[in-house]
Length: 386
Image 1 (cartoon, rainbow, N blue to C red):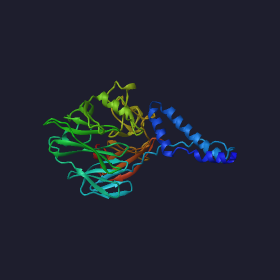
Image 2: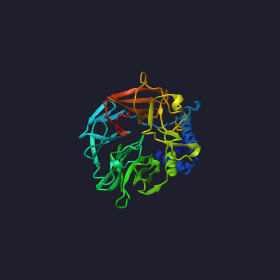
Image 3: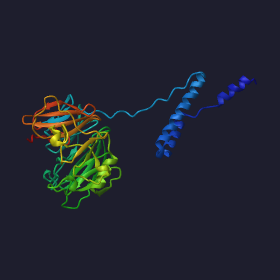
Image 4: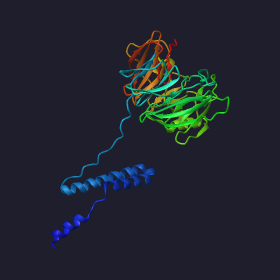
């Protein structure tokens, strides 16, 4: 047999491992090296380059190697300005007719969860609407029990993601917590809220990992003064949590769509005095003067030593929209549209403005004008406070 025939025969017998096997091997390496992510990335990149080199050499030994492409995660979806006027939901440029007056709404990356005045709970993606459930009868846990500065509402969502959470009451005073994925359209988990007879629970907030609620809230006290419970949808575990533990959770789960707060009256032993928050329902001043408020323009207001920053450490303050100086009333932060844009609701005597403020340019513009008394995310029904 000639040497050429031997080489051909050897070439036929050498079979590269299937791609699936290589992928499984890479996954096992990644799991073993999870604690050293940068090393794992370097290994994967090296494997990619070696594979590419092998293929290139087979075609043209004189060709130079090219760097492996860098795979970046997809950007977080942009959310449109959203509010409800009566039974009409405005979701960006789209309008959705609800089967009843909308009294509460929350936005996810996929659409709008909302509650109508008859207690039914719904979700719309802007084109179709589905009923998710019904609130039922809360019993002794009514809207008069919400802590100071917190907005009454039975639904929760985050500034990004697809999770929607709500309470249902199969019988008066016996709530269940429901976790729903708006992207897949399926219920993730449902659990009975652990309560003794005669006690109450009210939804508080949703983070990346946990759901929080108030237990037996006192309407005369601030949220941080309440008894708080942490619920883990992954395990169903419910446990009391202290204020420092809550803020530590929020720091661990902080995303780009967060603010850093200091001097706001919450746990002041936090590292460097700052803690993370989603920023929702922050009270906003529209025409602040530095000599009075310590900052110019449009910015959160609070105790005299309160400081609010974005996640990069820049002061969370903006230029008001052109010709917006002198507008009276209290405004609130109610929505993040993307990583660089927030929405402030500005209720006026005869209408409501929704102001979009841009972190990159520190400027604001009126994104939408609506009638008075609209329902907005996080805050619920807006009203003028002059």
